Length: 118
Image (tube, rainbow, N blue to C red; front, side, top):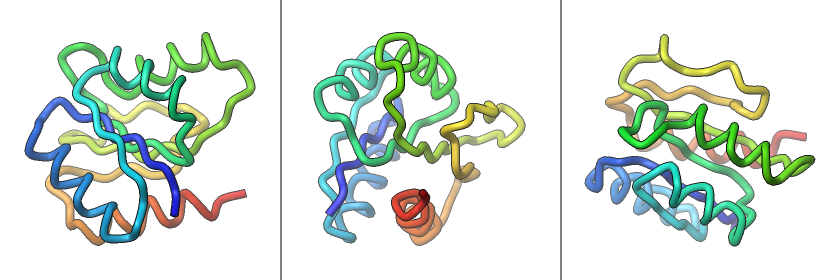
């Protein structure tokens, strides 16, 4: 069982992702903003993060920049979800990009793959 941090500003998408990942017995913490994601990361130290690329308060790139600035040396794989794959950043922790709308199994597989990466 892994700890997964999900950040998406759309409550229905956030809930859908949380429920899907719980099917694989993961502990899931879900938040709706950049600030919440950064705070939750610091207290949770998740095994993997699932981040929306584009949120009103700042998406995946901003979240990762803030975490990198405060948690030097901490490494956690990241799966990003986006409505526009061209917006996905090239951060070294991003191991998978999932285009919205996505199949639940695609999300589950991306998280499983991220967890077995060296």
